[in-house]
Amino acid sequence: MIFADFAKALAQLPDRRFRGVLWRGIALTLALLVAVYALLLWLVEWLTQGPVSLPFAGEVTWLGDLLSWGSLGLVIVLSIFLMIPVASAITSLFLDEIAQAVEDKHHPHLPPARKVGFSEGLRDTVNFLGVLVGANIMAFILYVIFPFAAVFIFYALNGFLLGREYFQLAAMRREGREGARALREKHAGQIWLAGCLMALPLSFPLINLVIPILGAATFTHLYHRLR
Image 1 (cartoon, one colour):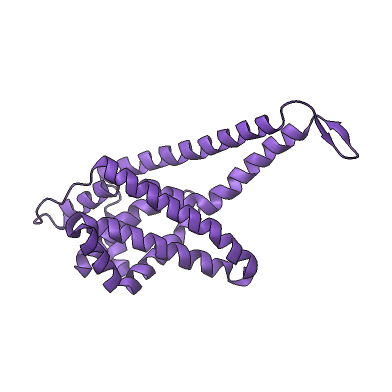
Image 2: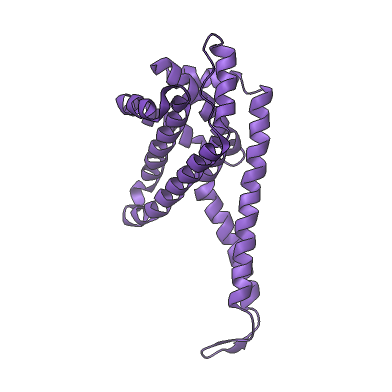
């Protein structure tokens, strides 16, 4: 049934509103990565201003260049691990638009859903991003302790977080926070599995920019099916 939900979401991908959210999500994701890199460059410049002396090497002038290139490599590595939370959190900011497009096509008989205000949506997005990034950073400890299980931990963790948040946001439009939470807890296993299936393709470059939109649509279908 989850695959049927995904197939419906995939068929609606050419929708004008889907494309609009896609381009906004790409622009915001790239802007965030550029901002992080600019912050790292500023930090490197601040740390290396003036002459730097190293034991047994004396004064060095190349340390700033080394750290600058190193910061670029760090951003690239971090983007691989943090693309899931970043892209997903940014798309969650526009989830209401995706959900409405799905309902307009597949559930036109429904009454208007509760509109999520920009400030409320932004607050939920920031909280979601904080939880995702914090959990993935903490998971690095488990990756070191259990390297053989790192892949399973990564997808199980992100599948749980993505499923939990995307279903909550999709259901909250019509159930309210408490109603959405109760429905999510009742169907926790199916929601976690859908979250894992969403997390898998998020690891691949370019594809991971589209998947959050398909995920938002899929969880909207999932909500209506479970409801």
